[in-house]
Image (tube, rainbow, N blue to C red; front, side, top):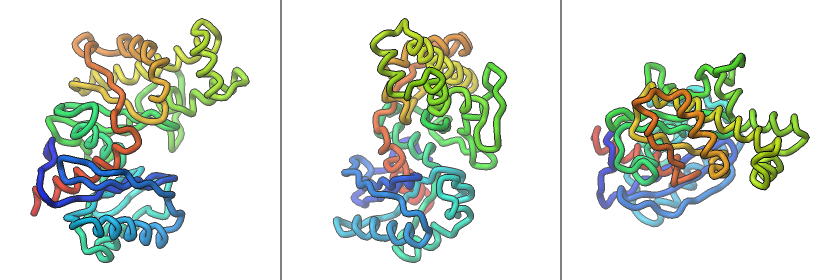
Length: 301
């Protein structure tokens, strides 16, 4: 896919379907509109009806040329494959059914890969052609751009960074890899509970007293993130590493520990690689889905 979106008078709508919320946005290739947010339905038929309504609402303000859908799981060009947060979508004919209802061509993309496209075109990595984006939340995922193209891999699952090997004895399970179990939001939650604190209480104590036990836990956690980022930078040699997700809200407290961890595992040639927080935040997936759809249909039609 091209690095930058094509500009035209036609508009595309990007829809990021999350486990709890749907975010949608319309773009003309150069500008992005206001984000619409609503709850994600828990059945296929209601979701399909909701998506149709969102798209028809977009049509009411001007012509739409195509639809881009971002999904939190594995997709192929024809259908969702494995969407753990929305299992009723697994192997469903979502794209075909939606095209029949809306009469608009539709693309599917993984939500983290969509977020990467959004950040490259409108966010922290604008103008870059080699980028690693890592999502840091209850889990860890992301995407890779190489020479201006999203790298999907043979199975379309490139960017499953949570399966990186952790530098300690951490055993994966069928849903969570070693680095994810060691350095995700769930890991921080468990560390907080060990101190009898909530995550917000631990962060507050660490902010007030960096030398406290809570401060030490947070510094160690930040280093865990950084060590994984350093490994990824060594593998892909990107221009920039972009971090997104819920954990970046505490980035000012994590930054130094992340950088220390990064320097400890990154090869010498990539230790100056900038680590930046995503600019688009939770809207990146919808923005990237819109750009992906525009680029695909401009290239192939």
